[in-house]
Length: 95
Image: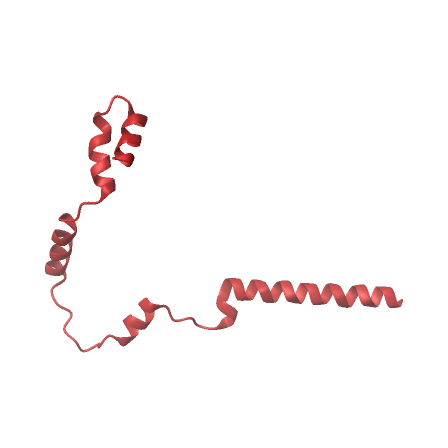
């Protein structure tokens, strides 16, 4: 094997190794378990605490969310009746 072939073989193996390492870091965090805030919060919960009534919690949540009005909901309510849809959007955004 000539010296040029050996150098090409080594550099290609190094490039493949670097590509594989980059792929592993990008896809799996390098094999480490990364704790997200949600996971940390779930892990910190007391398993013996009362869980509450799911139906009541859901009803409270839905009632709380129904009172919120977003700018999108306001725009959505006004746009279907407009004859010139583009003009209505522009005027609603500017005004």
